[in-house]
View (cartoon, rainbow, N blue to C red):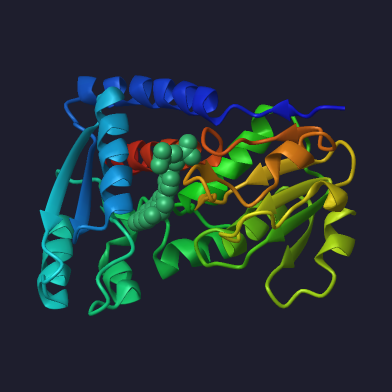
Length: 282
Ligand SMILES: Nc1nc(=O)c2c([nH]1)NC[C@@H]1CN(c3ccc(C(=O)N[C@@H](CCC(=O)O)C(=O)O)cc3)C=[N+]21
């Protein structure tokens, strides 16, 4: 048996087309949806990601402005810049690219973003809204994973979902989103004993660790849905996920590739959150 590939690029394209329609409708009302992106420092990966985000935005007609600052920028100056964007009614979404230089407190910067403009969904108020089921922005990566699962018509109700990784931005919100769909959720992490015992029971596995080969074929129940959040480099320098794709695809029912799976959907959900923010403001 060979798994069907869940095409993140195709779903992201479809999602961007929907955002483009909503953007056009807002523009017709005289509102130009606007995402402000702040990049501090010269991290090469961040520069690539941010360039993608700007290109995606422009493709949907959404305005994106990129503000670049040197790594030596003070935290106080960054906070002041975020506050100015909070106060600017023409800006609907604010994204501060992470990681920030080490002399800055990233959480403090995120908490400075107005929750109504927190399109990353990283603010404590956004996290709390997800926890309690109140309206608020959902973290783009797990939100994109949920859309990938939805795209294959998979009903999560009563299913066993195993999330591997407990980060604030992916693992924890992913578990809450799956719970919100009535899945039975197990959140595994680096201290989990016998990970395989958990994954073998899983109808859905979301791997979000940041290490290669965390999930191998022997750990997967035949037919399971595999969502790979990992962004790693293999020995040849090629991008790869947390899942042993070649092995696992022979056992799983569905699997996301890396690249071309979760990554493009993360970026697409940023646009969805931004158009949502602009619609709410209008
Ligand atoms: N404030 C903030 N928000 C973020 O959402 C955020 C961040 N900071 N810092 C870094 C991480 C990482 N992240 C990715 C998003 C898309 C791809 C992506 O599109 N990947 C492509 C491949 C890209 C490539 O070729 O390198 C793919 O999987 O097909 C990757 C990584 C968002 N992050």
